[in-house]
Image (cartoon, rainbow, N blue to C red; front, side, top):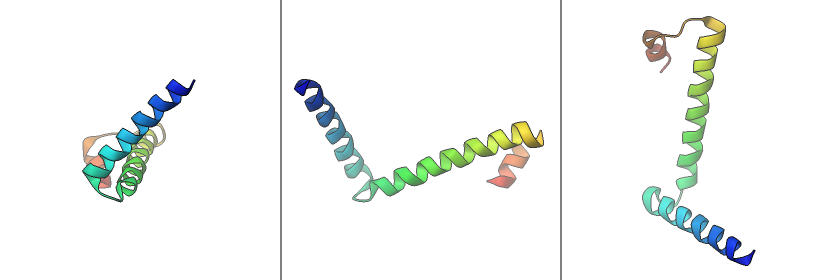
Length: 64
């Protein structure tokens, strides 16, 4: 069990180190904004597809 916990800690530590090196000290803010953008995009597609029945590139570009 301890070997599994050690491996998980190594993987988690490596990911945090890579993100910090790539995006700087406040990498978690970037990840948070990215997640919010993905959720916003997905809900927009769902709304256009199921509620408005108007899913096309022109409408999507206007929304963006």
